[in-house]
Length: 459
Image (tube, rainbow, N blue to C red; front, side, top):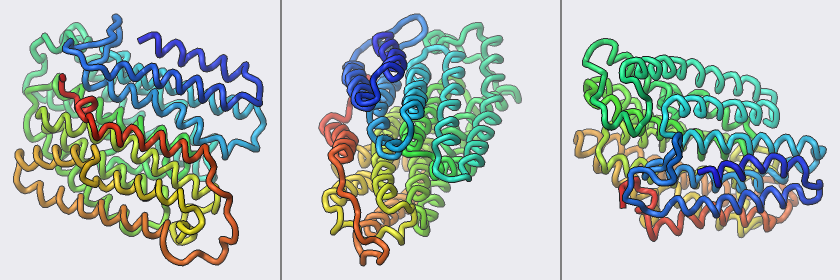
């Protein structure tokens, strides 16, 4: 564990001390080395925890997410090169350091085996994201977006802290490995109901459940590209991961506690997909689409069957890479046309033909084309929900239909159609951008060959 966390922390002096010319190259190559080193965590093991130290351990649920978070750091650094090129060197260094600071916290949140440390890391990821949004966002509305993010997260996670302390007094330990051996201390009383609710609410806000999702489109639209990638790919996964970790602890939960969450998640998947259909802002469209995908994840994690858990896991990983790639593509368009409105950047295919290939690939994975891992995940989730109750097929079926239609709508409006009159000349797409897209899509294409790595089932 430390052989990843210590090099990540040593990236901070690297950014401070490397000469201005080599600032981007050194940090990117160093973080890419860390990312390739972290791939060994994906090796299957029959033990419950690999790489375990007294306070961390990786099992089948957390290892794919930790590898994903290590993989995204170099990509975030590569993506933000262009919009920081006119800034003074000190400001570039601060930006890269804020990005690097989130990394150990996210790794700790995913890998910890102790609930208090998980809570601390869960809350600590908020600070660097807040700095990213409120300092490097592009418009004055970024302050209200930051306030939304801060207060939604804080208000929802205070009950979580109280419940964690209550559990500690009840059981006497908060180690996940120990909690599995204990009998659930929660009885079917009001305290149990409320503590179960409190444990779930914080993660439901983070993952966003429809109805508590209002901070997400705001934060995504106002954040710089690195902030959007961080939010979409990693911070939303903290919510889903937390639900997967916490629900087995409250195993004799009354059934009616799950009904509101399940209905809101499925209804929200439907509603956000239909919001996407009439959306003018490209970044907001991608943000709402991630709300609908995470709705499926929440619905799957609340049923708690092995199939639904593995479906939710695969969907979290593949959605992390896909939506991050879509945000990168939207950002390359934004850097050229300086607008996020869909109508103002129609018909870019004749101008940037290679970019439209990446657009096509990203959109096809987003709408779950057959061989992709997105489809495997959605099928697993659809089948478990259908098995749990037959009526859910109406909601999930319409949601998948709407997902396909708004994805094609996004592809057609950005790539096809007549060129707007104000676009006379655009910069060519650079090698850096192509490498960035390739590093997003390659893991997705390779995971088609071996999806067991991310399916959270012991191999």
